[in-house]
Length: 270
Ligand code: 2NE
Image 1 (tube, rainbow, N blue to C red):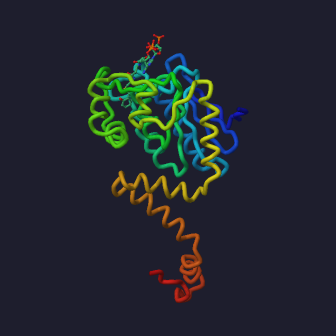
Image 2 (image 1 turned 90 degrees about the vertical axis):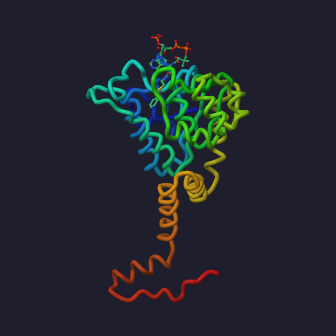
Image 3 (image 1 turned 30 degrees about the vertical axis):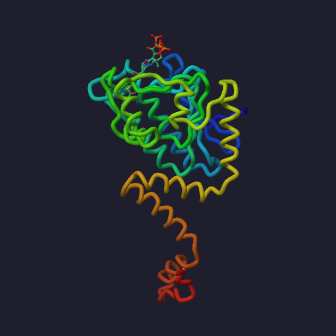
């Protein structure tokens, strides 16, 4: 596909094609492990994708065909987090997870090869996952002195169930694409050579749908799980819809025209 670069980065690719924004980790020599810079770049690209009205769906992937992402780069893990050039330890991938969850556009993980550790959690928080037959999934935290007790545990358990989520974390086993499909961890499995075309086809189907309906659905799915923060997100979308109405505009116009608002003509629905 003729992906076009939106912006050049050091550790990721950020491209678009036909309404699809693609953010791809570009560190194949490390199985696309992320550093603080990788995450900072992904985070900026995600925000640019959010603001770009031409982009309706985002694909998250890893370059090279052998890994989606192998989690935090252990060679830059320091005292208290992953350390970048500024020598500050960070766990900024947790902010990126929140961004993926909050962006009001569907995010699709396109997984070839390893989705391990913090890389596994990244696909977990995406709306949908399409996996190649060579995909391998798992958590490694308890092996390498780490854990993700946030979405990596609780949202994973919502997807695969409590027993399976505990197995995944306590045993740190690896699961193939068919295992993942069986436990509802991925939406579809395809041969590696069909991964991109299948993902693009799914995205194009999504792009034909009503963007407002997709936005409302994403926040509604989140609201059921995210408590007050989830309700805040859903309610924000309700406010957006209300602002689009003549009824809400009457209130604003009356204020600006220094008159009493006249809401009498707006229906009081049963
Ligand atoms: C993914 C896995 C199982 C693949 O194994 P294999 O044998 O196919 O590849 P290999 O040889 O291990 O990896 C290829 C190269 O990539 C590097 C390796 O060190 C190796 O480099 P060279 O020896 O050729 O120089 N590499 C792979 N993953 C890396 C990583 N995460 N950091 C740094 N270098 C990495 C196997 O590679 C594996 O088990 N990788 C480690 C997975 C892991 O434990 N990730 C961190 C989990 S913790 C986390 O991500 C996290 C969190 O828990 C909470 C918050 C934030 C992050």
